[in-house]
Amino acid sequence: MGKQYEIPLGAQHISLLEPLHFKFTTENERIVDTQANLFYVHRGIEAACCSKFKFRQVSFVVGRVCGLCSISHSTAYSQVAEKLVKIEIPRRAKYLRMLVIEMDRIHSHLLCLSHVAENSGYEALFMKTMQYREFVMELLEAVCGNRIQYDFSIVGGVTRDLKPMVAEIILKRLKIFLPQLDELMDIYKNNWTLSLKNKNAGAITRADAMRLNVVGPFARAAGLAVDVRNETEDLLPWKEVGFEMITETGGDAYARNILRLRELYISKRIIENIIHGLPESPLVTETKAFPDGEAVARIEAPRGELFYYAKGNKTQVLERLKIKAPTFSNVAAMVEALNGNEYGSAPAIIASFDPCLSCTAR
Amino acid sequence: MKSFFKALLNIFRKPVTVKYPSEKTFLPDDYRGLIGFNEDLCIWCRRCEMVCPPGAIVFSQDLEGKQTYHFSRAVCIYCGECVRACPKEGAIFQSNEPANFAVKESDINNNWNRLFDEALESRIAYAAEKKRRAAEKVVAAKKEEESKTVT
Image (tube, rainbow over all chains, first blue to last red; front, side, top):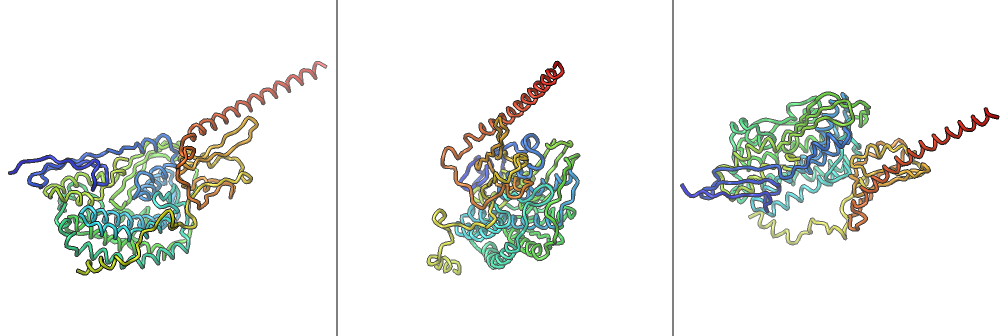
């Protein structure tokens, strides 16, 4: 047994993009114990939503919780508020929401993959992935009008319609994207340099994943079939548009990379199906009711299950709003998965978890 | 080996990056830009002010009752909710012109909070003035009636 050293990583670190602090206890370069420290960026958004803003304006506030899964947050809140005021949204609005969520998933997954590549020391692949990601940002800008904060989902429906011209551009651009995705799949699967840092790094077993209640790609890469899209059918009809569950068995960073890339194929198929079968109906259901009672809504954000709880008391302002972000569920397993790995590969492993601290700390 | 030749070929390829300030980037037709206001069409219902999430629109009122529209492009989040709420088409609209960067002191959220408070105060002052005038009118009418009955 060698001497044990304590090495901190974060809260600001060159390779760590999120304000998350780890304290590793290492022994011969190998991590034996990990402590995680969160909540550096607490912004008090929940309190603001329950005091300053009216319930119709909150969907714009929670859209600013996170820059990457903005649409997931505003859609989840919209669903909660629609349950509270008891309205059913038009069918076209449901399809448009799913369209933007899936496009958001493409850009979020590619961003995560590029960061894994960068933190593994493969800068060229980082640039390549980012280059291939750019098209979906432009398409989101064409659909929603904004590049990052979409402001697309509101209480009762969506703000704007999909133009036929934009739909054509999306289909055309997805056709160009398919060979690029194949190329990325080839690199992430077969590149020897990348596999040195990613194979067997940050591995977690299926039993551990189940015990620690892991969600999202993290769980699916460990062989656990958890996906909100597979479970709920009443709010957004995912099965109609060709959703398919994907699982990997490895549980390591390599399996997570491959899982994310394979999910992109499904996302592409869902987008094409939605555009081909977009139903005709109005965009918004207007109502003058006030929120009353309690409700919960779940949605599959790119990182995992996003949970919203809201309580209304027949006034314009909500009484309580609770957001549970996917990273919050994953932190315990993240700490578990880091143990036993080399300290040098810690940045790549942390990037492969795809932690989103601005969602978690709100 | 294949990737090595690819890397060599990349030296002669055109770069993907855009030289941003000199070259224009992709901008869709219905980009969410600055909020415009048409005073001739406005019916002064203040619905845009009510729905605006960050409070970037406010109406001030002078003592005569004339309202003035104020808009802060630094506070605005460009969600377009005011345009959706407007009952009169074209009175408030969203152009596809992007907002400028805040380089001048006047462009930053310097005076907005003060302006916002002043606008709300001016409305309260107008309401008080209106009440005072109404009371004056009642008093004048009463006096007139009294004088009539005396004669």
